[in-house]
Amino acid sequence: MPDRPVVFVLNGPNLNLLGMREPDIYGSDTLDDIAAMLDDRGRELGLEVDLRQSNHEGHLVDWLHEAQATGAKAVLLNAGAYTHTSVALHDAIKGIRTPVIEVHLSNPHTREAFRHKSYVGMAAKATIAGFGPLSYLLALEAAAKI
Ligand code: CA2
Image 1 (cartoon, rainbow, N blue to C red):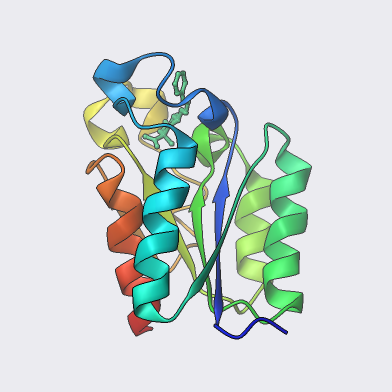
Image 2: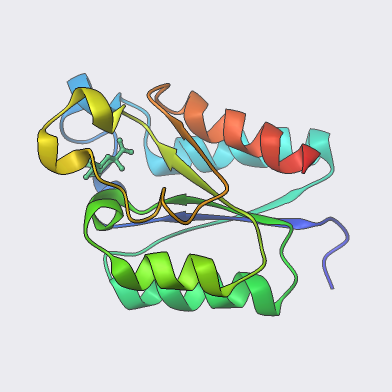
């Protein structure tokens, strides 16, 4: 058993490319940079951060189930483009009691119309978007308090 309550930080497709392409939209921090920032703040908040990334929808579904099964305190979920397509993720979020906070680097509502619908957001407890890497940090602060 970990000493500190665990917060899962799940990242979907293409987020492994962060910091390498499209810095105008997503910034220049890599996912490793974000992980380091969350680890540091997590330690101060008494939380253990378990950050993962997959390009496969089913992995994200399995990890949501794992969050519930292992008693994680919360999940921060940036499902990438699956946000806008995945009924499976919607159902998985509905199927667990672990609170899920939807996170986005950009603000999808200021972008293309196909990003305006979020199957994740329709099931999540809350959404934080548009602050770049700070979106993750704000979500972690919220996770510490719920
Ligand atoms: O703003 C976000 O965090 C998004 O979840 C990012 C997704 C996008 O499909 C969502 O609409 C909003 C895309 C992640 C792809 O990340 C890349 C990073 C660098 C280069 C290319 C893609």
